[in-house]
Image (cartoon, rainbow, N blue to C red; front, side, top):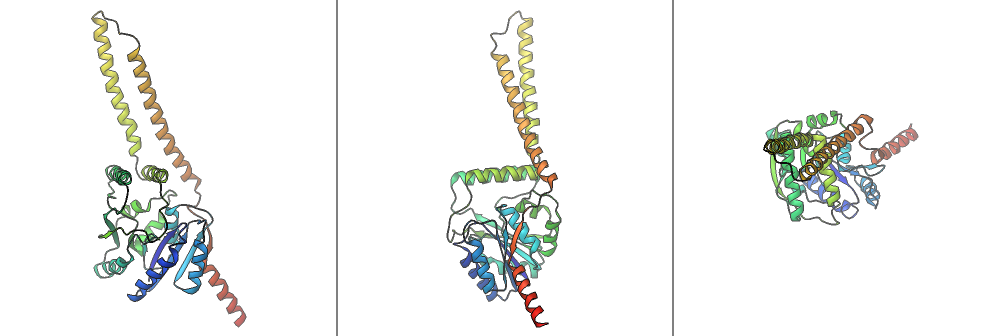
Length: 319
């Protein structure tokens, strides 16, 4: 069985079409499937539509969060609850082409790949600022953690062994795209063109992207900590040069002119100290979040629970 995990947040305009397209492709290719929509605390009618679809099609399942926990939580909730021998994670807006799923599954079944990752041949219609931001983020991740995320996406197929390995990871702050590469296993890549959204608008803006990048960089690498060391060494060199210059002038009988140099040193050192304290504080906040050990998400409803209750009630009447 193949589980298809689809995180959804305010996707009422896409849910029904996505379910129809995915079900049609999987059914036409003779693939036994479970289509799992994870509603990440949507404010629109997303959950009501998921419930309706699950009643119409027994292969469709829905999970509903008590509030918005983010896409990462939705992905890991799907991985935890899915029952397939392998699973595909993809977006609800069909920018990840579902036509590739049979090919990805064939690479898993016939060639023995445990992870089949779909990588972007291009980034589609994005602003220049968005593309530059993504390039900067992936470069930092590659140089600081040796995990190459260039052209990577959340669209990938994973064997049950990979799913179990990801579910066993204890951290609360997760980055699926990097962790699915970090766990290893035999991996193949397949290219795809990013399709335009079928409906609705993107839920990402610059503030959310910046928060996403900071969270994932600090949760997956200690690169920002090294910035403090680099700045400290740079300041030491600068201070040594100023110190030598001061000594040369002193022994040459010349006095330093004004307090410009002193002001510069004080301001520069204070700036480096504050930057360092800020970075350390950010890491400490992440440690604090981890040691509280709160759940990544809270599921308030599962369409399968309703089916089980109805089945148990029917069995009780029959007995």
